[in-house]
Length: 204
Image (cartoon, rainbow, N blue to C red; front, side, top):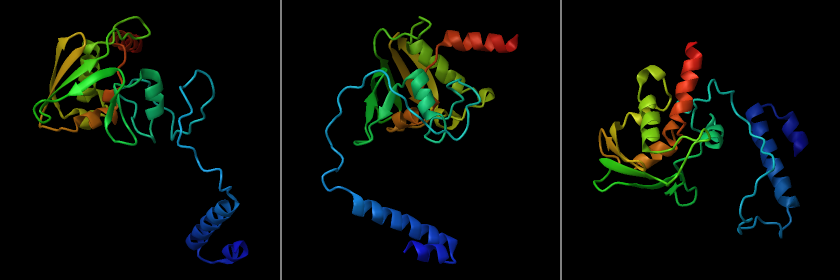
């Protein structure tokens, strides 16, 4: 079969044939008793090495300008800033991380984002509702040129209710607005103090 593939004149067909042959050989050589286990490997532990391929180097570590997708800097942003929420790959439902709750009582016209208590950035400043508002307001600033602006533009306004609670009002109701957060820079919250310090350094 492989000799036929090499001699075949159509390069596309040849490539498909090579892939099919590789899959066939892999399937034939597989051990019937080595199917992937569905049991958990236990709790994660520190250490180890991850080798990750990215399309390009980030032009900035500003969470508003990082691209939150698998071909962009999604893994980098998650590692640097954590996440408010994630999409469960099995149920496709939202799972809370730094957010404790994200609910709407009016069909997606407004939402209440509740943060976990006592969150703090590595510089010691609080990761609170004010910090989330600060980050989201930056993304909504057209002069910043954030790639997340399109999704963030669903937001008509935000209001800090208390340290842990942010009210979000949308331009139009969207019950699935949480998925816009998880797939954009809205999911990454940086220290307002660190962002301000970075801007001061750039202006010197």
